[in-house]
Image (cartoon, rainbow, N blue to C red):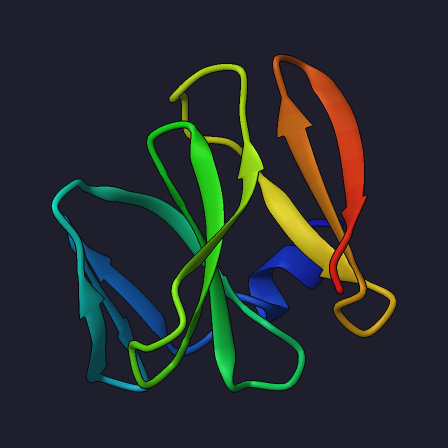
Length: 100
């Protein structure tokens, strides 16, 4: 899982409330970004802000919330099945959600 997570974070840089992909600014949010990974198609980023995991196009458009976590603590998450399933840790429990 750790190697898979590292592969999904390549070329991503987080600077407070800004997220960069391949050194280009994707978006600036009003709150700090806690974590981010690249979607398998390399056209979207999945990220956590506070207690929500969302997805955004790498051009900064189409920002959507996917998951509401039980707390705003930074968590781990990764994608499997070519991006169809998002696995995440919430309050010590590993959960999964199908992405459509």
